[in-house]
Image (cartoon, rainbow, N blue to C red; front, top):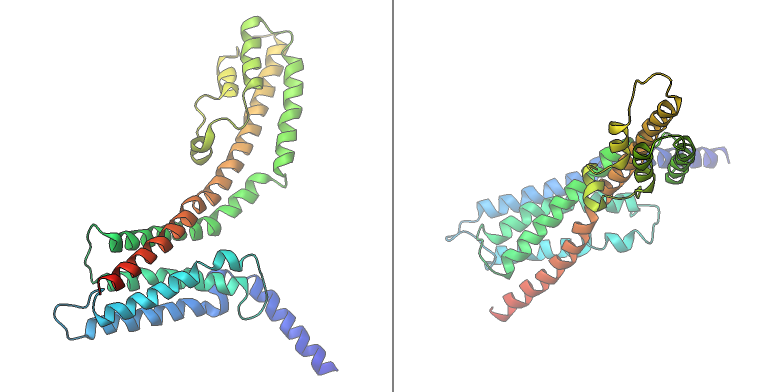
Length: 289
């Protein structure tokens, strides 16, 4: 019994340690090693073939490389389906994701060797370009998920998005009350700031974090400061400063989330387009064979 309990404890400990390892390093860089070995073998095969002209997509070695590349692309594209059915063990989601990344990167070499370095205006080159686009966006996705979550957590300060909006709403209520004694010009600045949509700026604003038409910043810039005895103006200025800071937190949150997600709007459609281009590529090859 003691031995069984000890074995179970060791297995649980190993599982916990594996959970804290990045998917890139999963199982001591297993899939990086597999991808590297596969790439080296296929590259040496291409280099050592004594054939003129050099192997291209229409040679026997080109067909071999094309078949390997096609099978890899189809298998790697199944990750989206795999995410909906998470299971532990040898083919856990982390293991699959690690294979997806490293074998996906190996396609840059496999696909290039398959072309025989022959590029033209045809469906074959289209499939190759789409493959590179999928890989590049995937690399961006790896960078985003490796670096941005820490910034997202730091910016949140233990607040949810709802908490941030509620904090802004509380400031707005105080600001609306504090602005009552102001003159017409100053009140209009505050009203414009309160009336502006928090989420204005669209996709470009979220990605760049630039909001040149921010009414709150405009109100701060044009609010008189330093006049003695003007308690209402000082209070409004302080509240506008707090509002600008709170808006900054919300906008940083939106920007980081957008940077985390934007690559998927290219990566997934490009993957679908790649599969369609590969189908056309294969059909045309066998049609003209």
